[in-house]
Length: 489
Ligand code: NAP
Image (cartoon, rainbow, N blue to C red):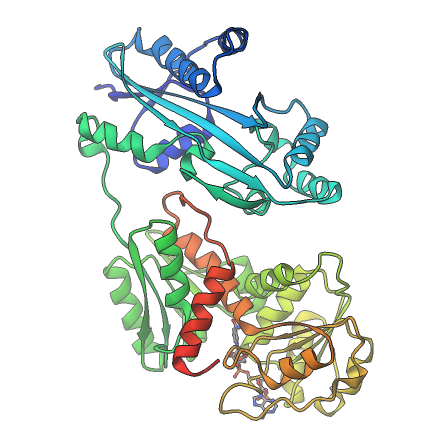
């Protein structure tokens, strides 16, 4: 059996995972170097931290490379904060203290990577990404640590920036994203390529193809969201709006063709949501619970239907409100396709009591039976607001070309939140009236942006993202300027 020519001289799971997910074929040999000896010597001699990180990477690499003539990768990372180096926190108390000291301030992760060939170091690379932890209270830090648990103790900074919880700790990150995680993979790949060490073992990824299927579909903002994230994440691929005529046969033929063309998956919108369920081989738990699908993922094992509306509604709500907001009681207007995802999203947000009102009462009752909710008459919607913390409009009223939602907000308690999932226009008459009464409002763009994230991660995330695909002001601004251009703001 031929041995792999590449060795990773490190026991770090994250370094191995970064190399693996970039298509490298390698063996792991742990170097067994006493790092404390090198660190203490460097400290005694007043050596700077960049030099120390490089010495550690070289020592680990050479400890393995001397015994193996192959290509050997060694790497080390040191966290530098206010002129000092830090080791991994010993326990959760120290992790909390460290985050508290770092909040509102900037630190660096010094990352040294070296490559040896035939027992000699032939390449050295140093990265120094800078990370600014956002200002946080001790309570927020405790919440974060309780959510993520002792896993954070494996990182010098007491965070795992590649997870959504970890990413949320930061105000700004600049520098090489993979160096932040522990290994600057792209400079290493470039060096390996030049050395002819990749051969056929490293194959360039095929461009990712995904899209949204509907009729009409050309107006969809989803391509803007996915293509923006793909560009930010340096993923080669494209997300397109694809129009498919109504009817199951047309839908199934279009899906067969996209699968044959190598599409990773699609979002599905009106009028194909039910067709998506029929076409799938398997339903995710969310699609089963909600009874509808807006995502199909294609894989060799078959087609999986999923629903990201609940997650999108929920994440949009959570990003917009104070975490102590009271969400005990919600009034949901409408009982169509979107209402299902909204109700499941409210459940995720811990909403205890959901009241539903719909023009066609039987449809509200059907949903109420399925999800265990209460129903009130459509005519009673204004009176039903009296003890609500949250009003959600899921009807199409207020959309361009539709009548405004007719509702008297005077009974709505002062602190209540108003969430209108309609996004054309962004400021519906309901949102305008709510702002005028001083309510916190959330427009439909929030759900739209957040519901795109699961599909993006699923289809474009075969390789690790160099930056986390966030819903942020840059994305909002991009969509708002597109809506302005279309005159539908
Ligand atoms: P749908 O299945 O057709 O449901 C439409 C709902 O609106 C039904 O409850 C319907 O009541 C009600 N409605 C329509 N005209 C009405 C009227 N004149 N008076 C009272 N009620 C009326 O549509 P959907 O898929 O749920 O979408 C609804 C809205 O949500 C659309 O504006 C859509 O663009 C928006 N949406 C936004 C997002 C997002 O990400 N922001 C996601 C999905 C949907 P009946 O049952 O009585 O007909």
